[in-house]
Amino acid sequence: MGVVTFLFTDLEGSTRLWEKHPEAMREALAVHDRLLEDLVEEHGGRIFKHTGDGICAVFDSAGDALEASADIQRRFADETLPEVGRLRLRIGVHAGEAEERDGDFFGTALNRTARLMSAAHGGQALVSLVAARLADDARLQLRDLGEHRLRDLGRPERVFQLVVDGLPHDFLPIRTLDHARPPSAHHFLRRARPGTSRAGKAHSWSPPGDGDRCRWFGQDPAGPPGHRQPPARVP
Image (cartoon, rainbow, N blue to C red; front, top):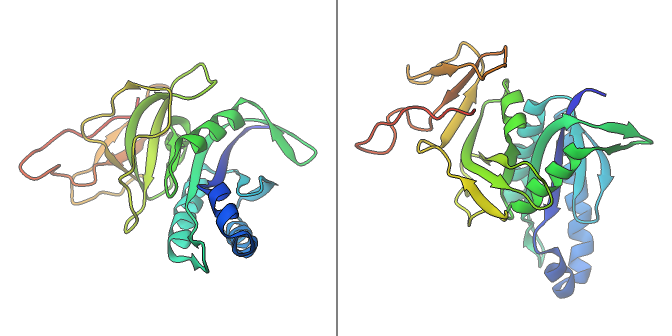
């Protein structure tokens, strides 16, 4: 089949929660599953596998997968469950080709999605470069975390963090083998629909070999107070 986008989730600290609150966790995971099923479906995706304390979902559109990730983060930030409190989900999003067989998917794209998810902290969503490029219709903010080597994968990955207004966005360094290349100095990015502008400060660019023009915006067109920097470019 063609290129699709995968969204994987995992519940941080689930072993500890099961040890401390086994009965409450049974109820919490029922809520967890129901919320994820609803949110994935709302954005045109489908869950093809449950992993006990997470899901594997597939979307035809990278933009829909990122929008679903943002809504998942918002919804779980608002959900406080008895005894266990808030469930902190780690999310990984990547796009690529995969083989579908008997309702499941196979291929290297799934391995990269799983490694991105594993590198995240609870409450954090990590996005690959290809998924970020393909999400040209999503009004979302991404933070460039630079290039990282992911466990068991030969090729380093340029990693972005999805930043959702009103939610925490400062985390410890992501869990990767090393930090192969630092992020751009102006590392807040916002993608908008073609033809839009933000405070008259739009900058557009065309990735090499990419026929579609993408527009990226810094979080603050003027940069940090007293300092102006050029917009970051995704290679």
